[in-house]
Amino acid sequence: MPNIKIFSGSSHPDLSQKIADRLGLELGKVVTKKFSNQETCVEIGESVRGEDVYIVQSGCGEINDNLMELLIMINACKIASASRVTAVIPCFPYARQDKKDKGFFDIPVDNLYAEPAVLKWIKENIPEWKNCIIVSPDAGGAKRVTSIADRLNVDFALIHKERKKANEVDRMVLVGDVTDRVAILVDDMADTCGTICHAADKLISAGATKVYAILTHGIFSGPAISRINNACFEAVVVTNTIPQEEKMKHCSKIQVIDISMILAEAIRRTHNGESVSYLFSHVPL
Image 1 (tube, rainbow, N blue to C red):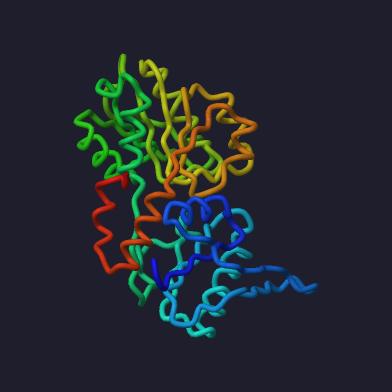
Image 2 (image 1 turned 90 degrees about the vertical axis):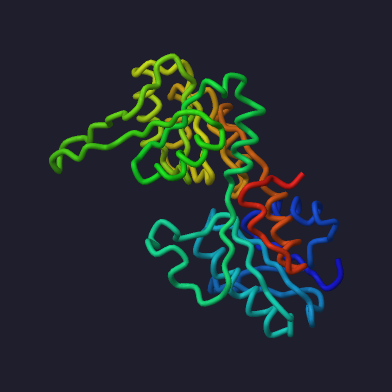
């Protein structure tokens, strides 16, 4: 590919390398370091003049440092006369606090979806998938689970939290029948995993034979790993938008779907001026 450069921030070099390998490119040379006052310093180690530059940086780990590093890298490439700079952000930081989707962008944004990769994983790894039920752990994710259930031609259910008084624990109410079925909990992210672990207990007590959880972003902070280890999941499946190697050492239930090919194909299509919407319903081969 002529005139394209891919640089990796320091948040997820493994994913950046997979993306570059997939595109048959070398990662660009970049050095990131900190001054003694903790300010981030980025040196781009090669010419980007006239190039189409892609910077891969995920919103994980030291989120604020990584976000600042991304901004400084973008600025460095712009100053060095790159023709275009695109940020590739596998896990978008601060998204929980943004209720207006895309509300603050005045530049083109393509939101990529893990759904095609999730469907593929279910069909390849859950033998009883035709008798499964897709479950949302809260009412907010209903649209997400109905879409997956429709594509698999199976039923869906949702767990509704009944708000009690301020000092009482919320009661979880299951809407839908999971008796004698494999239940697959689907959500966009799992952080401390309190909700999905409660939801798993609820599903087993309601008669589900097995429970899987499939989550786009596995943040897994605080007590998350011990909660998963103590919960009744067959597997907790996440994508590699966030590095999971360390977490997997402490939890055998975590499995990872590699989404590097989706990001690589989005980069290729953007670079060539092709439509990215193909990726909303297909996993690149």
